[in-house]
Length: 317
Image (cartoon, rainbow, N blue to C red; front, side, top):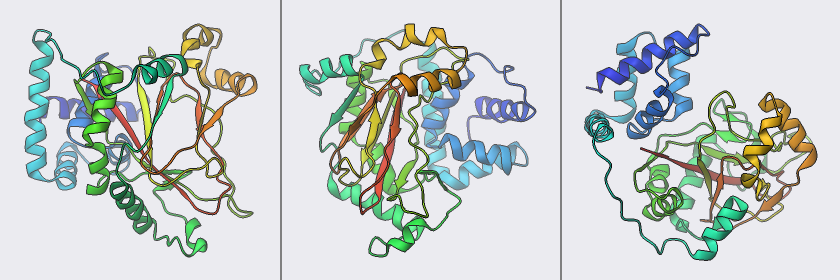
């Protein structure tokens, strides 16, 4: 049985938010919700879609989670969430972090530029497994380019709203990725979020790329807290295949810079005029990480093959 106290609160909060009321939950609700979703292995988009579009009542919500994850997994998640709640109320403990995960040069680059590319973090077989999963899910065949553009309800822009499969979980739970995030967060008290995939085929006369605007994934109505975003290149991504683009070093001026703007839309408009991004090409298995105050966007794919990525992030608990 899923931890009823917070599960019930989550369900009821979103029933209220359906009506357009936002601020009735505890101020810590969104953070606790993120941890709950991470522990139960649920993507935020898929959970919200169910709650807002299909869910009949609280029991239906519990049944959906149990069917999606399996009873044994839910039982383990129940215990893990209860343990986290008890630890959160307990005294602080001292952590011991490994000092050899990142070099001094990498740490310096991260602090100055706000991003890192770490080569060959994920093995090729794991990358291929997720790429093949994408191909099967979208019914695309790499040898037949005409299949690359067939619409699918879960392929939205360049995002693929797919979350639940063993292939993706292997990369989410990769110990090297965990160690890198722990080193950057300076804490081992982190949990992987259940993130989505990315699929960006080459631009053609009939399929135009419309998602290359630099942006932040932020809500300025809330305090901006440090958060690390990342992706894994599941195939080689040379500069012409639509690699991540970002504005190096913007993390160091964001706090003062953003004060001049009344909305994120106005900040986006001005930033896109005044700032210049750089591409971050890479190879299969490379992990690209960036701070959430770095403007970023996918690039236009002008190659002869699609770009495949898996998004990665962790939350401090």
